[in-house]
Image (tube, rainbow over all chains, first blue to last red; front, side, top):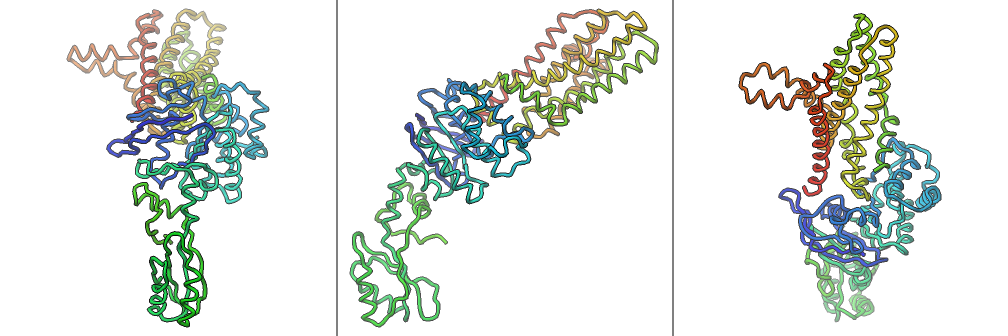
Length: 324
Length: 234
């Protein structure tokens, strides 16, 4: 559906993106993930024809966005970072304008009413956009992208500025839309893509550093072999006892100490459950365990690692300490 | 394109700017008309049209300043740029919308002339000739204003630069008399908007001037399209 080949773009001497290539098939929900300033918005602006690239091609359903802009743009609904709304118009006037602008052929009133229901702005339809809250404006922006029912939807940080309840609503909406649209979604919020997207493209410093199914990344997270354990007793004794347990690759004492108990971080070798052995080893030495919990690695960890390792999944490498 | 035209035209009158423009335009034209014809008891409209021509320096930026700079500032231009509309269509729609307002005001202010017919016998052809020239100059000035507006995201900067540019274009001919180097004078008189206008005010329908104003309009609208094209590559 969308094919990007060797896209490069510089602003003056600053290279915003370099050699970005990917392909998105029909019906995919792809998360475009990266820290601020990684080149997400630039890529999306190029993808929608608002900006042109220095080199490379963008094909939407086989149509080149620069050579065949009008036909290609008809296939795309775009919500930029800042919703492109006119404050002096009412919501229904605005959507009517977008409808005309996109040369839609669907029945106008029904189509706009339907969209208003879907994004839940029916109650503010006759209010001026300038008087709406940020959350509502964002939803009017989403409505704008949906006008004309284009097969490809591109959202640049769609949940920014929404309250938690609205965020959940928008995520559900995106998931619903993903059933019969191709959706590209940019964000720097990890749980968001984890919740919605089937595939993740991770971008940093203008380069793609990973392009994988979300499952693959979350499997790494589930495969946690790290535990945080609180034990009462002298640190050195506990460390010695833990090091004596077979199957433990690494033990580290964490600095926070609360009365007599201290916290340790364990990492076991692949495929072994060391919890039982740890329990017996410590009880043998008379060191009571106050708590033992697995330390999940979330996408954030994986993401930071991807950036550090230049795209390799941290499957067998010791994980970085969780960022606090 | 028609959608943008419609929206633009409506936005002139859902924001105060359209009313401000019409009010200033009509008050000024009525005032000048009273002073230059009725008060002087003369049916000669030359002074009236010259004054109106100079009022364009202030009036045109009112219409043109927000056309693109506002869109750029509020990022709504991304909607237009990602919509299935050509850049030329977008620029033409904006231009035509502001020209419609200008044209409408000129028509309404032309009601002034009716009074002349009740008291004297003005030369209809001369008035029409002047009106046509006024509309043509307005067209060229609007195109220049829109071009300047496309280059900045500050309405204030757009309006100030537009005022300065239009003033220079009108005053070139006066400046010209101070210059003794003949080729510079030749060059400047070629650019002068005002000296071409004088033919019209003498009742000569100057085809060369017509071509000049139309090509000035086309040139600046083309340049505006290029600004957008170029910005995409910037």
